[in-house]
Image 1 (cartoon, rainbow over the protein chains, first blue to last red):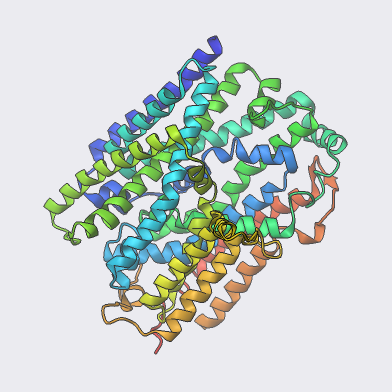
Image 2: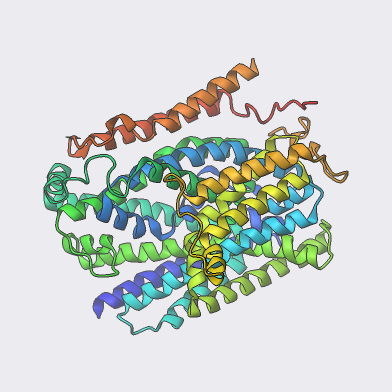
Length: 509
Length: 72
C-alpha cells in the first residue's frame, strides 16, 4: 500500500511539474498558430534534441524493447542503432533540413500544407493529412490505453481503467491546450534527461549487485547460449533490415516528428542535433536493452503479461527506485501522446477543417488568433475521441496502432521525391501516396482473403516476400508509382515547381 | 566540384549504414570485457558515425540542398 502511494505520488509529482512548465510556457506564448504549433521556430539544440528523442521513444525503451531482448537476445540494440541512430539521422538531413528551409521560406506548419502548396492541390493536402490521422489516431489511443492499464497495475485495480485513462487524457489536454509546442518541448527535455539518467543508475545498481558486466554476461552465456551470438532465432538479416528501414521511414512521417523539422531555431541547431543523434541513441538503448538480456541470464522471472525491467529492478534495487522507473516509463508514454495530440490537432484543423470549410490560408492577426482557438478545440476533440475509442478498443484499431510505423513509412518516398525531383507531378503524388497505402492496407487488413473466402476460394496475400515485410515492399511500390506516373504525366498548370527548388529562396540565414 | 562531394558523402553514408550491423561477425558469440564483441563494434561504430556527422556538418552542410541547380 505504501508502495502504491509512493508510485502515485511520483506520477502525480511529474504531472505537477509538467503543468508548471505548461503555465510558464503559456505566459511566453503569443496567441498565433505558428507559435502554438512550432514555438515560432525557435527551439534550441538541447530542447530540439530531447523533445524529438522523448517523442520518439515512448514506452518502448523501458517495456517493449527490453522484453524483446529478454525473449530473443540483445540484437535489437543493432536495430535501434541502425534505425534511430543512422537512417533517421540521414533522413534528418535529407528530409528534415530541406523541409526546415522550405518551411521557413513559405511559412508551412504541416506536411500536408507544404505538399498541397507545391502541387497546387488542396485535395493532396487533405489526403496526406487524412492518411496521417488514420495511422495516428489508434496510436494515440494505444498510449492512453497503456497509461490506463499502468495505473490499474500500479494501484492493484483500486483505480479503475476509465479513471486512469481519462485522468491522464484530461491532464494532457489541459497542458497541451494551454502551452502548445513550447511547453511540450520543455517537458520532453526534462523527461528525456530523466529517462537517460534513470537507465544508467539502474544498470549500475544491478551490475554492482551481480558482480559486474562480465559476470552477468557469463551467466547469460550459460542460461541462453544462443543470445550472445549475433543473429539467430527472431533475428534474420531481412528482419533486422526490414524493421530498421520501415520504422525509421515511418518515424520521419509521424506528424509529431515531421513537424519538429519545421520548429528548429537555426541551421546550427539542426547541425548539432544531427551529429549528436547516434551517440544519444547509443547511450540510451545499450544499457536499457542489455538489462533485459541480462535478466534472462540472471533467471529473473517475468509474470505473464508483465515487463522485464520492473521485474529485474524489483529483484536488485529498492522498491522506491523501481517505482521511480515505472513512473518514468508512464511519463514517457505521456510525453509521446502530448506531442501526438498537438500535431494531430494541427493536421485536423489546418489540413482538414480549414480546406473543407472553404477557408484559405489568410495570415492576418485576427485569423491567426481564431486559428489558435480552433487548434485548442482540435486537441480536445482529438483526445476525447481517442479516449472513447480506448474504452472499447475494437480489435482493428489495435491492429492499426501496431502497424502505424509502416503505414507512415509509405509516405516517405513520395515526399522525398517531391522535395528533390522537379519532375514529380501532382498525379504522380496521388498515385504514389494512395497506391502504396492501398498495397500496404490490403496486407494489414484481411480484405483479400475475406473476399476470396466469400467465393469459396482459400487464398490471401503473402505475409512476406522472400522474407521482406509488406511494409518494405509497399515502399518500393510507392517509389515505382510516384516515378512512373510522374514520367507519363505533365505538371498541372497550378503546380509550383520552384517552391522547393528556388535557389534564391533556400538560403539558411 | 559539388557533384564529386555529393558522390563522396553518399558513399560515406552508405558505408556507415551498411556496416552498422557487423555482418562479418554473424553467428559470432565471442565476448570481450563483459560484452559481446559485436556490441563493442556497435559502440565504436555509432561513436564514429557521430564524429563523421559532425565533420559533415562543419564542412559540407547544405550540400545537395542549398545549391540545388534548376534542371531543364
